[in-house]
Image (tube, rainbow, N blue to C red; front, top):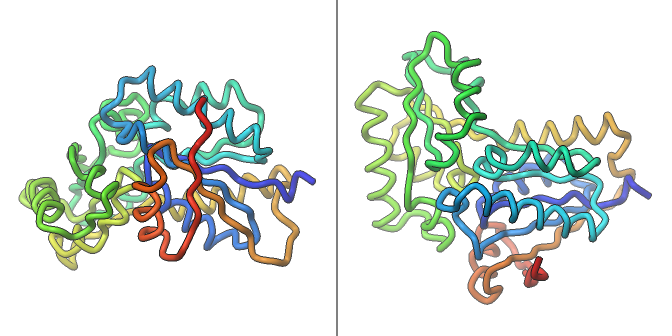
Length: 265
């Protein structure tokens, strides 16, 4: 039955686990599949055609597993590939993008900082968001090279990670930003260290909660919500070396998991 089919979630690496955990919280009965495309992480360093190819290959893998919906848990993949994915595949495809709209509603100083990859910040989707919801506020785009790689190593608060956060957050604070958008799904895992540098009067906006609610809404519209009373399951794959990726994913997920090699596309 379609209601019992799983939901596929993917990211360039482990960052999308921040979205997966919110989906699990909102939809406890759903079966979830997760692909970390670690061999190609970070997508922000990849040319657009590579990101497009990887996204289509992973969604094709999900089709083979019989999913009822897919979540693009990567801002860069959303920016580059989601339109083509929706044109090719018939089931619901839910995507994430920088939370410019809620940040604009939240700021009191009128200054917002967007922490994201260069690919995301250069995308037409991001520029559209700024044009649509950024009127009346100052939006400062802050590329964050190196931060994704730190999360991919599960280095969430070491000296190098703290130095990078300081480098990227300090200029935003100097310009009086009081709201910071976590515009990459890896960055919620750095919430504690970013929050420590930013201080208690700066709000951090993570769109993962909104994505999980949108997944719930779309499944309900299409009559695809699980009818099971038992808790759902999770399965994990990576295109990287499982022995390298597994301990990182297990640390971020917070309990023991099995990570399988992604079949080559």
